[in-house]
Length: 508
Ligand code: 0RQ
Image (cartoon, rainbow, N blue to C red; front, side, top):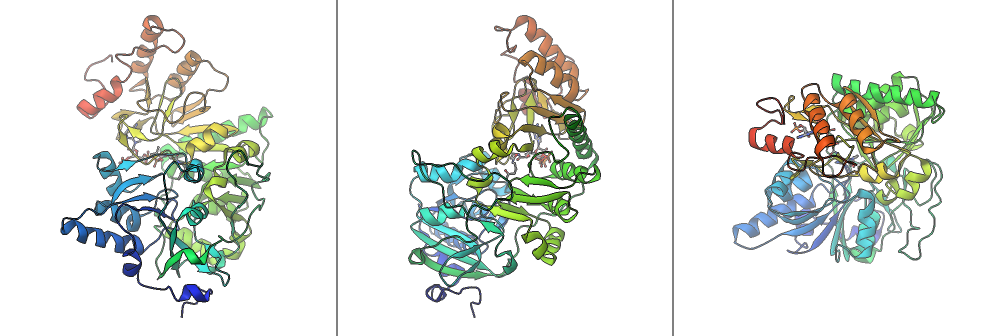
């Protein structure tokens, strides 16, 4: 009976998800656990969505503000979005139902660097946190909590919320106990101190989340898996992109700017990231480190094979096969993986000190190297900036990768002017498509434009971009970063009007 709840007082608070959800009231700001489909509450959000739908059917308003670590899953973002139950959501999300509601203008979505969320909450920028709903592996006798498959912002949520609902998920392996490192040394300015982490595998905190049991109003037991996105083997385009990056690493080693141990890797999620990781393995690297946000299947394989010696992150994002591999060898992985709070995994001070190599996806880059990670046609939200900005601005290297076209060749990934900028030209060093790699380090805007058009653009769009740049270089108001302002967003405009950024006839 309640074997994962060792605290006697909290055993008395075990109840159903419906009973717990009934304590969440309209208008509340509710902070929930969860980061890239891992460690999110599995039962309370669904029960809450049902109560919201019933209220809506009675003609009553019932919406809440939802703060998380990053993306969650259909059982959280999906159900609450379907019920029309969110008036505000932050930060990163990737749920199709939620994305549609955001792009239909039905709720407020705030996209924030993942490393900023905790401190902005502490600063009071998001107002008062009424309640936290947090998934954990177990509750110790003293009330401290064994974190789950993501740590995310849980430390901050537990400290900031007035009241707490805990979900104890029996399906999360108890053997994760000891894997986490929760840092309690953060303070508010002007009282901040240096964070004494100098290696990716340094432990600077505690394995458990501290808890004031008096704040807990409900404990719900669940037995359900994380989202577990299936793992797709990297396609040819991703492999080509990865190949360019790996060749670049080779040349950097030859030039003496990197060693064969590289520097701590940060890797986004998805096909290209997996191809890069797989490529590191075939290229013969060993003993590397990762200081990143998410451990995906590709990284697990590298740890298993000794390519990566140790990985620090805030979350897992594994496929069913990845979970199986992890669970079967958990004692091995516990020694080699550290899960931290996201304010530490994504901390600018630490990313800069360690000299991370940041490798992230993008929607588009413009010819000057401004990168859009988030918006289609400058107006429709895809997912969010995630941690890409935390790492890109502060890393030793920052690479942004994408196929040179999207939607079957109809849209160019290289555009005259980015319709939304997440990473400015000052933060982007490498732009990579399957066509090639543009190394922008030490280049002026016009030199960057020539390099990006030559190395990265798809042949269907290259002449259009070259023509734009040539004419802009002659006719632009200012000649430092030449643009033709009435044409600069023509690729996007044409896509919105006709479904493709290719013109019906030649020329812009
Ligand atoms: O949409 O599936 O509907 O066709 O964007 O694109 O090529 O599958 O690539 O999965 O790597 O995602 C930037 C979105 C790339 C991701 C982005 C459409 C394309 C497809 C996905 P469909 P792909 P990926 C670590 C770091 C920001 C957060 C981040 C991302 C869909 O990498 O969210 O970096 N990054 N986090 O068709 C119109 C274009 C397009 C386009 C792509 N130019 N125009 N649609 N798409 N380019 C993780 C965390 O921080 C948690």
